[in-house]
Amino acid sequence: MTLQTIFRALAWASILTIVIVTDGPIGLRPVTHFSPNLERLAALALVGLLFALAYPNRLLLIFMALALAIGVFEMAQLLMSGRHPRLWDASIKVAGMTVGLTAGYLINIIVMSRRPEPSE
View (tube, rainbow, N blue to C red):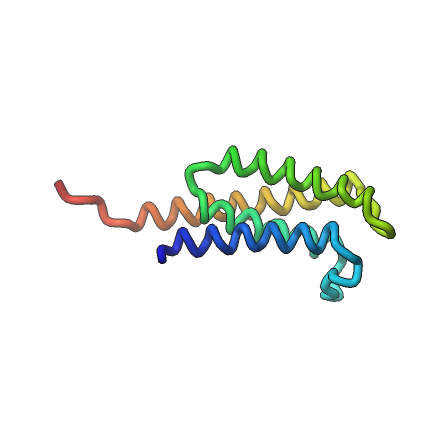
């Protein structure tokens, strides 16, 4: 099993976790004692990082797909009792995802620059 396969499994597991926490019962939401905005930012930064490491050549597609998914997850809260979608929450999540994607991009650049060039 390659490292990229592991990142792919972790990336998809992380987005599933976000769906459960965002749209599931409020009791499933973890309590960290940090501000909700910091929690959102950090969680989506991790998702973005994992997706960037899992699919390093598809960053623009990942950005668009995750931004759309964040919007859909936020709007799905309309169907949940006691949940309330907010544009501010979605924007914090997109910002976190962008931070994670950027970090993953930079990590990929560093890793690629340290690989030896193939000999001919």
